[in-house]
Length: 260
Image 1: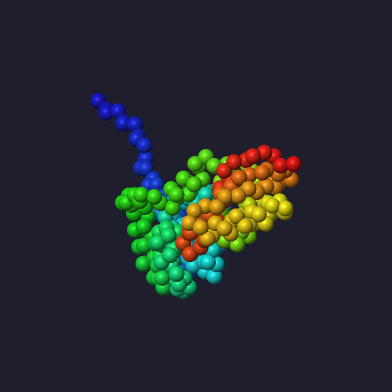
Image 2 (image 1 turned 60 degrees about the horizontal axis):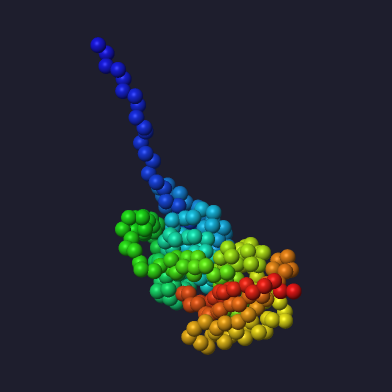
């Protein structure tokens, strides 16, 4: 009597590939076998903003270049977009003198200075990916947790501007609703472009006052939306240190009324 054939079971399970984004990679990257990961290469930090938003990588590997002074600006954007993976910074030409502030401030997770061999680079990536997925010790309050707490705690809106207020580097969805501008549009705008001309000086004085205090300063401004409408808003503001930079944090506490 013939033994009936056993139905074929499911095939071998493909190992989960971790998403990795490599920013400004050197030519030697082509010699590294990264086939075990889902890897995307982008030329600069601007391209990385879009990639982090769309791909949600588990790890960002950044090679320093002449624009590395803006790392904090971009990382803040990534945190708003929901990035909570590892960020590793390689500085093969040793152009970043104050890298300790980037690590201590949790802007980057790890920093490596000086030239690095292909084998050493591959070993570091493998080790960090394992740590991130299996052995990482939880921190009491990561930078990601801090930002999510700020953005989600029920404020009408929250913005982060550069210290000289010439560019918005982070904002929540309520800030987009308040201004009528998308986050991409806000990132190209300064605070002055969102305020009415008459109240700009008063707003600026409140922000400058906050720089010399240990707690937030309060004020009132009229936000001019994309469609031209005005909203009179109470706000508090303060200076927020992040890595090597200071940013101005503005929290809209209440919208009083539509301004005439």
